Amino acid sequence: MKKSRSLGPAEVDHRKSLSLLRATLESTADGVLVVDNLGKISTYNQQFAEMWRLPPHVLSSGKDEDALNFVLDQLKDPEQFRDKVNALYSYPGQESFDTIEFKDGRIFERYSRPQLVEGQTIGRVWSFRDVTEHRRAEEKLRESEERFRLIAENVGDLVAMVDTEGRRIYNSPSYRTVFKDGEIQPDTDSFKEIHPEDRERVRAIFRETVETGVGQRTEFRFVLKDGGIRYIESEGRVIRDAAGKVTKVVVVSRDISERKRAEQRERMEHAVTRVLAESPRSPSPILSPKCAR
Image (cartoon, rainbow, N blue to C red; front, side):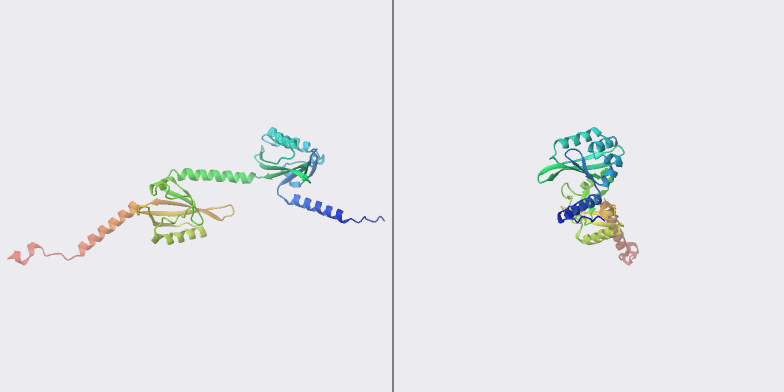
């Protein structure tokens, strides 16, 4: 029976390094391809093969050119893709980052850098990341923000977006009907202009809205720079992230100063009327005893 050869320390270390490299390649979410200076595939991970939908026989040839030719038909701009690859092979010391778009709507980020050993370039590492869902989410967010701005900038209500600490992110142009330009700025405390007697109550309602996700309607007073008072009616609506966490609050408010002043006048008129009605009346001159004589 043939006796197995024992491994030396150097060979053991080498095998450990290869095992670690393979485990690292297969555990990453990115597709990785490594080629040498002659365009021969040195190694790749399974994620790379699956992302590019490469059958085993294409990769088994060991030629980068075979894989390149197979994937070109999937791309929106295959010529640009090939030109980029050829340019990097012509300048092996360069790094590169760009975005690849597919005919089926997928989007990959492509990162490439030279493989160096003791300062010498021996090949190139290509890394691909599927960012399709991320880009779609970004586009949906952008469209949502555009719709929000379009609505906010074309309504008479005061529309503000604040973070969960109450710091301003956005104020609609309608705020100019209450405050002068420059008086309220992004990344400032949105409670600062609230009347001191109302501030803590409003802040408590805001905290409860962030914690519960349920907005409440409330009234308070703004104090203007010139000392004037504006009465405001306001209600918040939370915005959540993909995990359901409250990240922002949209606060829709309206100036109800005229209504409040009208209510105050009405209360004063009622009070005056009531005082007059309850005050004792002087005897009528016609019925006065003096006049009767």
